[in-house]
Amino acid sequence: MKRILAATALAVVAVSATACGGGDDGGSGGRTKLVFSYWGSDSRQKLTETAIAAFEKKNPTIDVEGDFSDFDSYYEKLATKTAAGDAPDVMSIEIRGLAEYAGRGALADTKGKVSTADLDQSVLKAGQLDGKQYAIPTGVNTWPMIVNKDLLEKEGQKMPDDKTWTWDDYIAASQKMTQKSGEQVWGTEYNENPAFLQVFAGQRGEPFYANGKVGLSEQTIKDWWALLQKIIATKAGPGAAKMLETGTKPDLSLLATNKSVYGSWWSNQLDALSKGSGQDLELLRMPKAPGASASGMFLQPAMYYTISSRTKHSEAAAKFIDFMVNDPEAGAIVLSDRGLPTNAKVLAAIKGKLSPADQKVAAFMDSIKGELSPIVIPPKGATEMEDILKRATDSVLFGKAKPDAAAKSFLSEANNALSQ
Image (cartoon, helix red, strand yellow):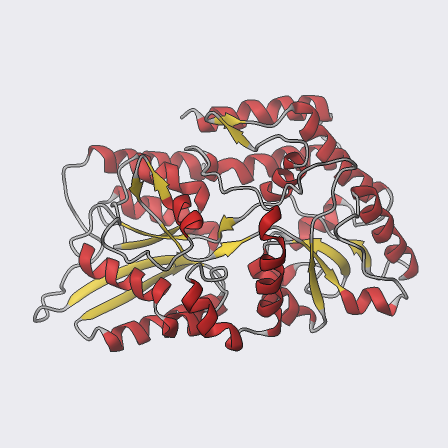
């Protein structure tokens, strides 16, 4: 449904002749008003409002209105505003939405408008399509395994060697933790995010996307589900019903509530997970299949800043993005909330201000940078992938569908979404 709404809205943008922007000067003596849309938690909203205030102090003729939503409603809201010719001047989007929004003419080319000389050029390329710089990465992420070291050592267990551990090692270690705690603490929680499947498939040399379609084989999808089923069957982790309760929010996770020793989340979520648990959390490489030549782990922009193609204030919008990615003052406020800064100078300036958890992320990212796969921009329709994969995965884990049928159904539905 979200995909249909977004596609319909963006199609309206593509054919609309009305050049309406999300902001106007408000009729107040040459002042410029920008609307900046973004999603996230309450803590992100507070950080962002502080950053906006700092920008306005440096740019007294520009007012920035933060248009905040939770993630579940963000894209529907953005699509509706875009369809109405009232797109925010500066929009946050994910990598999954880049091809969608750029392909339908909703985004402006930022090349030459935002200074990018100090940004990581390999990451910057992940905002380019058809030779145009439609998006500026806010920061970078990866998808690691996270472990509660305090809980692990409390039960007399050692930290795994993440350079050599396998999926079987991970399940065995998790199973042992569940048993030792008398099922008061689970060995691991698991995550149905496509990033987890992407890592798993990457170890087999399969990309998640290839030539505008899903690049995964049915067998790899079924084997990933078998891994999740084994976690449940061995009681290394809880059943599907329990995992459904925790949702996809870090603050509700078993890791954050000290009910799990292991779990996989985005690296920039370590700080929130650590604060929730109040314990010592560490990042590890994801386990590997025996004989795998690649880790499957990959670098990805946490999100992007983009400028609406309909804005009347592209210069002011670019100035705001430039501040957010290039100014150490903004970096010191936002820190790693939108991923670790891709501007090396900003990262160096704020390193001492990062929380202990964020400093761990910085060190971890530096240690594995040579093992990460290049960034790949998903095709149009990828915004729906998480929902499609979750439905298929739940159907298998709840016993409502056989893996063979579910894999075929997933690929059919996913490729249909990508072909729209």
